[in-house]
Length: 306
Image (cartoon, rainbow, N blue to C red; front, side, top):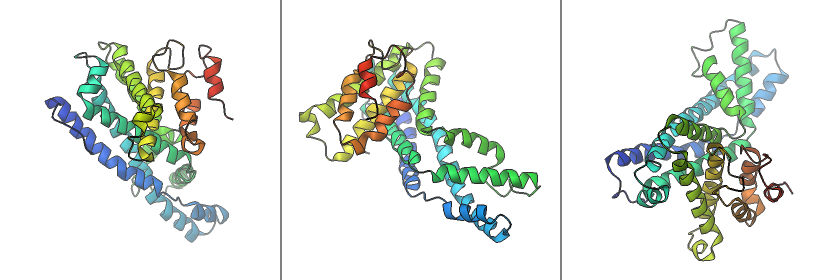
């Protein structure tokens, strides 16, 4: 990652280094998720042949390493949460305005954007892969059956029943990483009562505005090296909108919102539909205030499924 670190003070440089480690791991997480094929056939065979021990053992042997991967993804979400706290603390301190923070600490702002990009990409991949839920459901059913039959399963497996319960809550969410980030941002605001909430919401709306302007202005857009840069900006814009909607008491869709929602939605709808449908769905189904009475009919109509 090419970023300038010369302007970071000691504590902020420590934050950057810690977050950089997490972001390096994020690339491997996305690769693992992208290549996750599941154990659908083995599970089908096991369900169809409940009395054949060999078939059951084959399914269990196929599912256990996959659940090990799901455990790794879940544990990574906890690390991501810790990283976000460090970044928010650095980017929202009372030392200067949110805009000045983003200008002076571009290396940290870039990392925040990369966390959002990872989050939206992870959830897009998770939503389009039903094998994750199927594999984990089968694992939990089998684990419970083993416990009932007093089979020593938990000692041999890295995901015991207690951890499986926590992972189940994580994967039950349509967008688990986004939920992790939304909850972490909300917790950051409630834990730091000495910090005006505007420090956080202004940081988020400034980032949304920067992405929107870059995407809708031909002069800036023409400088993008590839379509990947467009996807990156779109995901970051949607990510900060969703976080803003959770953190701000009135949300992102109210008329007084500092985020120009109509313009942001227009930018999304101006892209090829196949490339932004997941992001539009994130705004439709994972925001907190879209269906409030304070949201204008025009915005609701713009986000209606065609």
